[in-house]
Length: 89
Image (cartoon, rainbow, N blue to C red; front, top):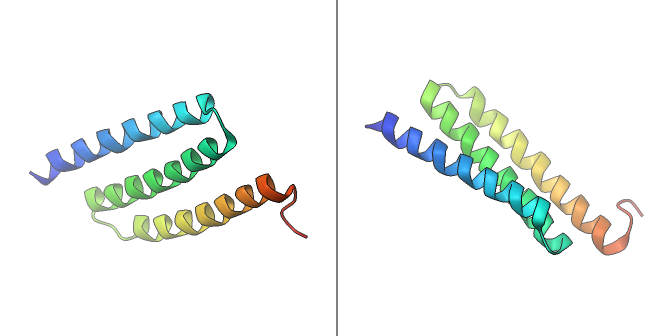
C-alpha cells in the first residue's frame, strides 16, 4: 500500500515541478518567477524525503535539509537583488 502512495506522491510532485517550470518560463512578472523558484525548491525537498522513505535511508533527509538552507538563502538573495539591485552592500 505504501508503494502505491509513494508512486502517486512522486507523480504529483513531478507534475508540480513541471507546472512551476512553466510558470518560470511564462511568468508575467519577476515576483511570479521568484515564487516559482521557491516552490521548486520545496518540491525538490519533498521528492528527496519521499525518495528517502522509499529506500529507507536517512541520507536523503540530511540532503533535504541542505537543499532547504541553500534554497532559502538563494530566494532571499534573489529578492534582495530584484528590490535593491545589489546583494551585498
